[in-house]
Image (cartoon, helix red, strand yellow):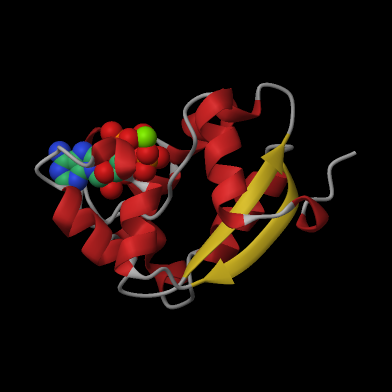
Length: 135
Ligand code: ATP
Ligand code: MG
């Protein structure tokens, strides 16, 4: 267990993630808890199909529940990616979500879209228009 996150690791880190989003003006405009099947995880990560970690990643992502959200805010994609930290938590900056909570490059706690086009696909994968409270 990492000493700087020991106090909160007893809880689901989702609460701490939500707190950090709110504190950084990333507005949650849709949110739900899901449990992906392996096939659904494979569809979500289809761009990584050829990568060596694809099997492990989709196994892990279908092994338990996940909370999916739509975030809104100025420059939201880049600002959220800054909050997440580098893919490999060992290289992530101090104070980032992955640095504080990840235990493995594959089990790195959070995902974030990397461009408006991928965000559009990923939002549509999990939410319909009625579930998103966009202004
Ligand atoms: P994400 O897309 O999940 O927000 P990212 O954009 O930082 O993360 P990607 O390169 O898109 O990183 O990889 C997607 C996910 O695949 C990572 O979050 C991680 O869980 C896993 N992954 C990436 N690289 C590796 C690796 N070298 N070994 C194991 N798993 C990896
Ligand atoms: Mg990515």
